[in-house]
Image (cartoon, rainbow, N blue to C red; front, side):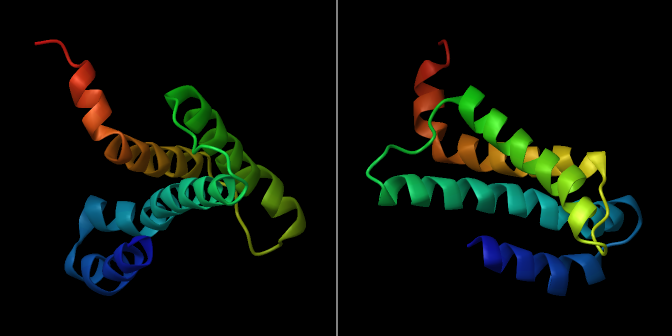
Length: 114
């Protein structure tokens, strides 16, 4: 599904938009999807080892922030074509947290006061 969203962003959304929205999709769309993908990968690896997925907002947030910081500040040190951007850390974090919220929407709705 994330690959389909990435393709939709690249092929359809970016060419059809303009201005600020287009710049956000071009600059940060893939980073937001990467954050969601990172969460899928870590949950898949945890499942393969018989461990439960990351469930708590704090652990998910810390994992995503760590991945984003590594990707944006460490990777440019050894990959010359890579450029670090602090806003991409936020995009990565937001994408992963959006997926986490989507995955936990039933639990979160039950917690909401009536």
